[in-house]
Length: 477
Image (tube, rainbow, N blue to C red):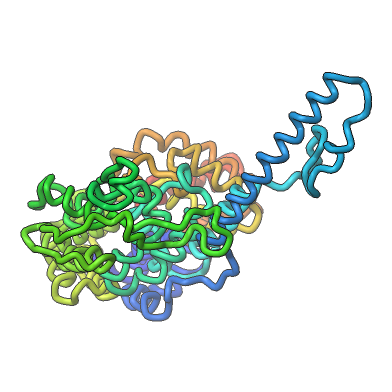
């Protein structure tokens, strides 16, 4: 049995998007599947923004930190001079570079956040702008899915976390998996996050001169997490040989003023010679050796199966129907990893439309659903939204490990009670609305009689809104 009409419309917006914005259930009720497909056809996934590239941002942060270090040293010198004498601070200290304070200053009120945090805030706002836009939300959900699949961490490289998503993920979510794979694995943020910038071929010029060797993190995670999946036939020898191939994939140090923070292939780091990975010999063609392996991994049957299951588990059920996984895997293989066609197949499958809702929204999905429903996004600072995500255990672009945030119920169910505090805070920031109308706007036919009765007994409209976003039907996708 599959959902129909307004039930299917509400299901589509919760399951494949971030929940309804005002009027959306009625707007797509005539053809929910068609509305999702239209979202795929008209969206590129690329918002129009004026933000710095990852390299520009990294160079700016490098300069900022250097200036901060210089400022702190000047302050220490000034303090030593003041401690040594009651005389005025020496002229040398007073002649400190412009913008550097010779003596500690009381921070002004409303001081802007430091540059690394401001860059992160600006990128986060672009992300939430797109998620809260009045579309079905399908393309943005795909961006979030792939960004988490190929995750990096702002804890390790804050300047690039948002730009990485814009540069290496967004342009490819409706393209071919092979292109997406190459973009993420060669992005400086990924190379830094998984330590490939430290990897040297043992027999490379740099490896011999510096007595350094391989770091296998990027090779291992590419095979285990990004493509083939665990227990898919590769061996430790494959990991080691692939790591040798990826030596030389590095970045230009951020202290270089023109191209710092950008990708570079450094032949001096590259392990010379042919390598055998997954039973195939790859000649030493420099950077092309690694690209050839990534191309083959993108088309491997195990990759098709791994991606198909993960996509179905993300959108439909923690344990997805085997028939759906098989259909997606076949489409992936038949279309050479065409990700738009893969999304079309997901939407077209009847297994994707079963009324039973088996997915618990992650904290970020739930917060976004609440913002879309209430229209509260414009009233809440982006920093506060990020704090809420962190409080619920899913800090933006800060996954606990290279496998990203889990999106299974078991990972988030214990934290659901903590969402009530966030629900109350958000409810306090939006104009009072008619609870009965909000039920229809947010859930429509999905709302049970019990949920409707609970909301009707609320002591205030604010409490009713908090009850609504904490209802089981709203918590699930």
